[in-house]
Length: 220
Image (cartoon, rainbow, N blue to C red; front, side, top):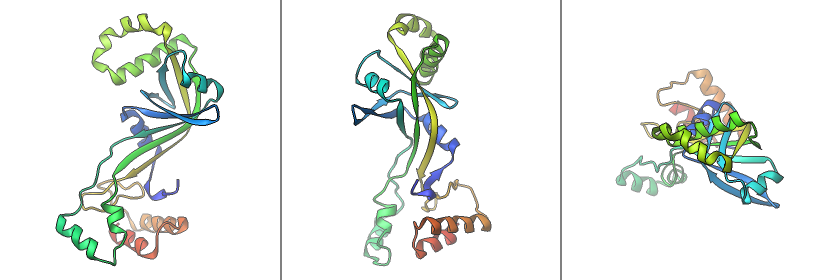
């Protein structure tokens, strides 16, 4: 990941998957990229989704099992400044990047999975995967799950994506309007060692000029 300062840990990424309404599964179809938004549930290091037994997606996955899945969590436009402050920032020629980084931007959460996809052939795994999907998306209708499964399971295929790599990313501002970088939580106070490590990492990645690095020290 290029922006290491916005990289989050595995637990964060897994939580984004669990909270997301859908994930976009990207694959290769006859040499061209093809992506489909799907209802996805996670169980451990596996992702599951259901499908009809034929179609473009089914044909593509039969040819190439490598997939990339993207999940998006909360997205919002930050409102950090008053109109008067915005005008002052725009007039201040010493802060040319502030409008772009703090105003014309979004706060976001995302997770990306790379893995291999397999059709589920074991009947008990297939039933359990369907149950997990329904518990995630229709938890208040589970009294009728057995009836639905009995009528639809024979015309439904289940796929399992085995997670090989997973990354999480976030851009978020704290209550004071400062971006929370390097995995910082709202109430976390960084000690001197962690500050120095963050600065060293920033310099090594060459992602900050000297002003931004010192801003990091002063903020933390």
